[in-house]
Length: 173
Image 1 (spheres, rainbow, N blue to C red):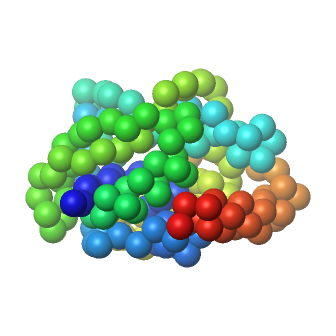
Image 2: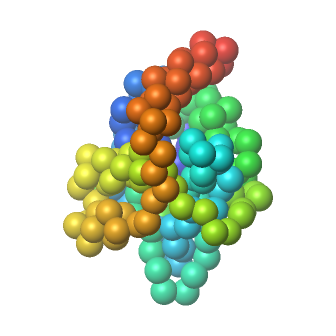
């Protein structure tokens, strides 16, 4: 059995999904979700990662991202990484190759307003958007998102995150 997952945050980036988290999709493609907007209201870690991305309904906007085709096992693995603080939301997305697909995305289950992502996190979204050739207008939109910057922590955090994710990956295998 397989499932479709729409990633709009750091999981768009192959480096995050495959190398850091050990989740290998059956396929991945550019996709668009209509009627939603990208927001940064998922609580993070103060002074490190103030918040993470989420989506919320809107009448006029759309969110671009990556549609990942996953096995049932890899879908369960993703829940272990994203399950805390997020809820699965069933949506209809348009994949560049697959057309209209029923998929799930994660939406904050405990949103908090007034936060900005870290520069490191925002840059992961930009890198994922560039890797999957999302529309240039969307990439420009991501680049203009205001961010919080903690220079020392920004340098120390990536190796720490990698160790944590490697530990999680071992415990889920």
